[in-house]
Length: 106
Image (cartoon, rainbow, N blue to C red; front, side, top):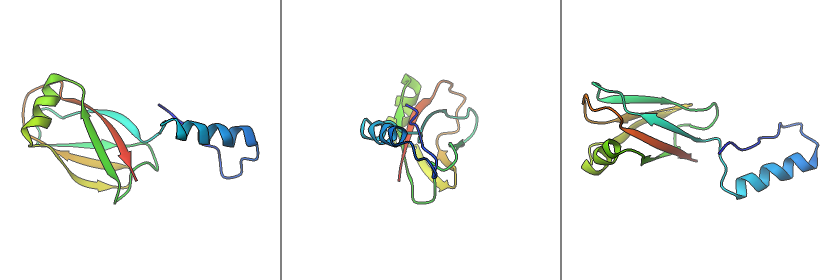
């Protein structure tokens, strides 16, 4: 769901309108996929430049059964948020395929 982002000096009105239409339709460049790191208690997510800052809210959605189990157990949380990165703290497990979609708000 990549959105067109016009530059600060863009003067083509059609490009500016396209960007507004895409935002209104729900497109965003602040989205991605992450698979939790096996045999580790944390997973660091590097986001697209300019999409995550202190104060942003990463929202996780499980996309696999193992991710849903981890999510449902209540042992997964966002432990830090910074410029273009956030960290997920989770169970230290050898379980594979704990994959999530994420969207960053704010």
